[in-house]
Amino acid sequence: MKRTWRRRNYFIKKELQGKYIFSFFIFMIGGSIVFTLIFSLLSANTLTVIYDNYNLRIGKTPLILLKEILSAHWIFIATAGILIVVISMFLTHRFAGPLFRFEKSVEEMVKGNFNFQIRLREKDEGKELAELMNRLIVVFSSNVKEMRHLTDEIESRLTIVSGKIRQIQPEEAAIELDEASVLAKKLRAMLDFFKIKNDA
Image 1 (cartoon, rainbow, N blue to C red):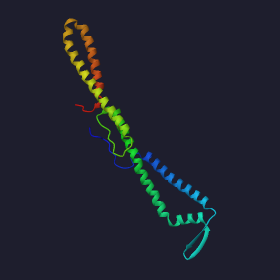
Image 2 (cartoon, rainbow, N blue to C red):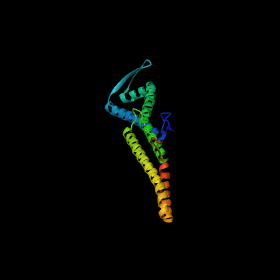
Image 3 (cartoon, rainbow, N blue to C red):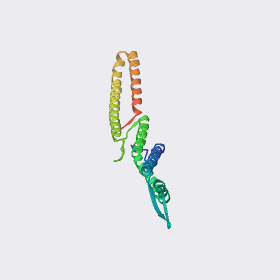
Image 4 (cartoon, rainbow, N blue to C red):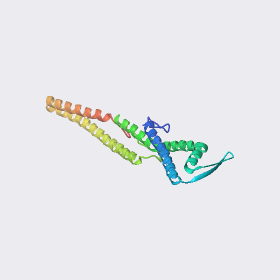
């Protein structure tokens, strides 16, 4: 059976990925602030000399460095922020994509469709779970197929026995056989709900 869902972009589960991207970004900002504070504490008692536009300035090292970084290197700060967002988007895609696939697979199973296999990309997370789910699909399909075969056998034998027994005790045999036949049909209807691998 052809898959009815496809991953078309990197924002597969926007809420989940957005939360992680925001967390990575905040982590980067927090790390930068902590680094700046530590550097400021370590260099609080030092002075720095700057030559700027033909002017010579002297000031405390932490303040001068902070002003220089913000005024001269803001493009690098913005680029680093964008780079972190892009990298975290690709990293979250490795588990958001498989999570999306698992959700769609379970939805198909709830509908009774077991005629598919979960395939993940080489670098995706969750391959162990995908393998377990694929084994479940194979085992379930095999059991349903065997139950269908047994149902066919029961219906076939009921038909044969029906003709023979009706001649001995027609009324009682007819009632029992009709009930058994109804039960076999109910079982068949329940089994036919499932679409399994290699379904003929």
